[in-house]
Image 1 (cartoon, helix red, strand yellow):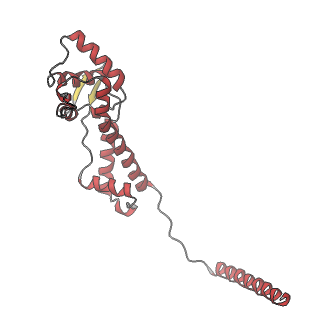
Image 2: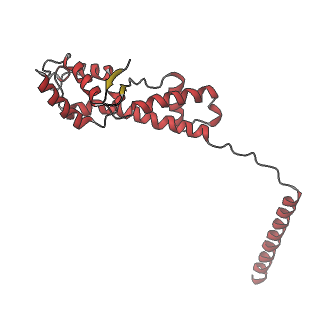
Image 3: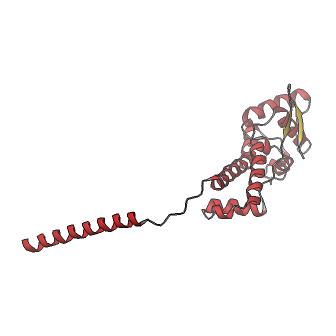
Length: 203
């Protein structure tokens, strides 16, 4: 599900972000722990990583103000002290957008809105049933935002492993290289013997 909103020149879609799951989640965990190898990344897995990365990068885009307004309009139906009229709603929305404008578009979802309303009372205050102050909402949405950004970073890291040039297999040394190495070893041995002899004579 996406919320379409209108800007002056283009229709902007507020993406709903689904975190990686299943095999992709396992790959991300392996990458995070340092146990992911290039040989693990089959063509099908690489395609899945690219698709998930595209979705996550889109979810990381800045939010459209109208998307934020739509999210808050939905929240007003879940709290007991939502804006009383359009003017108040506009004022509250501007204040929240000013503080939360770096919360990516993918965090403004129905799930995060419901998560706000399901918060338990705090020191007897029914947080989830009340309209949030801008700073409160920023604190609430920040973990969702950081999860999206972290997924982008991890997926890019996986692709970097997949796209890294393969190491060329080491070739066996040819006859000339073997002869050169042997001569060098002989010279080192002679020098060591000479040094050892000088030490014995001094003793």
